[in-house]
Image 1: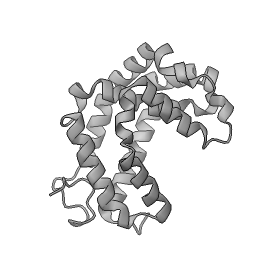
Image 2: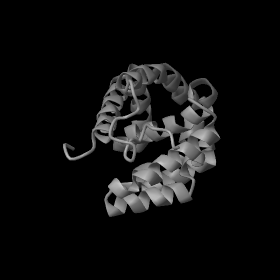
Image 3: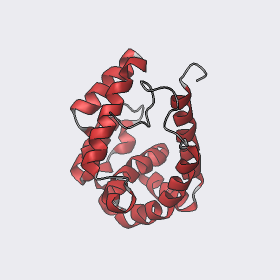
Image 4: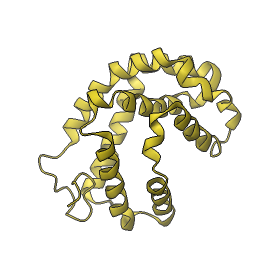
Length: 179
């Protein structure tokens, strides 16, 4: 990690802190325990992905800008960072942008597509059998945990955001809006 530009390194540190806070949150622990009954060791992964859907559902309350603008800006930032990525990650990023993956989080059908993609990469894909009903069956539990957790995540993220956007130079700063 020491070889990464400072802004990227700080982003990795923030992501790890977000994961830790999420995993320790009481309502998330309860949600994971509920999901683990059917999906075992992948419960926390499914919760994390499910929260992406609930962020979309609550975008008006928590999003920094209209969702379409956020997607355009995010895709631009991802593409701008490709030269820093290993070849496999760069191909993945290109596929994400070309497939407009962020919009998949807006619907249950899109989320089921996300879950299908995930299932192909798992050592125990059978643990995702029945995942297509997860967000509907446990909508209330996901929503309650998300609403409780997300303001804490925003506060945590605010502590990692730079006072200035110049973390690693104009060409590598993932937080700088495109020109």
